[in-house]
Length: 217
Ligand SMILES: [Zn+2]
Image 1 (tube, helix red, strand yellow):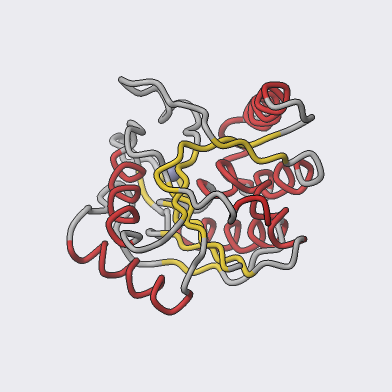
Image 2: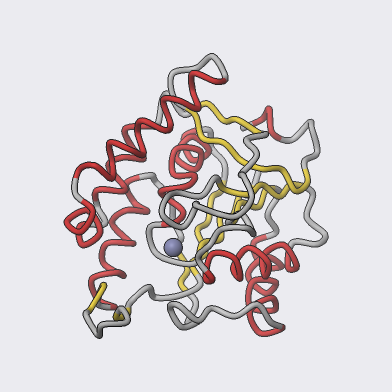
């Protein structure tokens, strides 16, 4: 199968479905990561959050940690990724070349405007795709005005280590958030695993799912 994950920033995909993608790679599937922005930028105080060089270097090392190649990065501006014909068509172009069987993207009620717009643009671009699953958001952007509904669980007991290693490769973010960040991610995966009688799991909302597809993962 061909599997694509579309994220707004370098680190979103690993955080949300890094274990699932690592599992798919090990299972012999073709996996691609598509990131909408180079993820560089400054905050409202003018402080640098992440330089472009730093984000690209970390993003490439992290995608390798979960075994995913290629990683494609589009040139939409960090913090201002649009939901319009330009973003929909950019994703559509990548999808028509890669022809994915499964599409993963952000949950559209995420409170980060980039995550939300990436989700909407991907959902539009994936209108003819059979399987579209939406990531569980991670705090603080996951603190939305409606609750996320855990619907589709994927066992990642065999790849949780790869996921955590990939997240730690985002060194600038790891230094910023500290080890509480990875401990919280691992703790949540453990909780999701407990909910589905496994050790670790990632979970998704389902936009569309052809039932005979996912068991192959
Ligand atoms: Zn993000």
